Length: 110
Image (cartoon, rainbow, N blue to C red; front, side, top):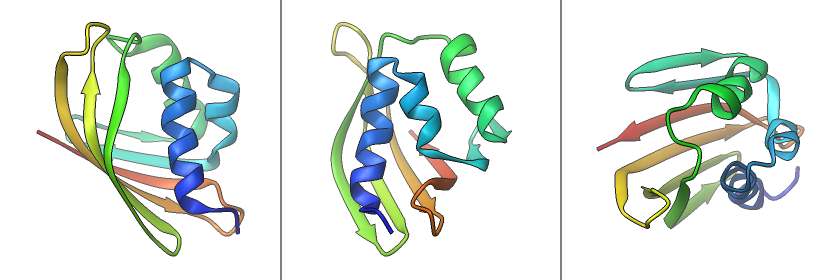
């Protein structure tokens, strides 16, 4: 299995860079994300939202702590706007499959 922490760090790097081809390649086809305001089922729906429909795309994920344990990785950080102001704090718990791609993501925000 590829390095789970490296995969999760690549997830945020691709998203922040707007590299949606790379971003999509890190997600399993049956990817699911649960977050406080909605659930995305399927990689295509999630990538389309992140690329086309999210309210702000000029953002950066500042990772404060990344914890890896086998096929699960928790990332704690802040989402920053283009000026570096904190939009919100988050904890994401990623579950990776045997092929090293992210299958499930639970997002907690404050």
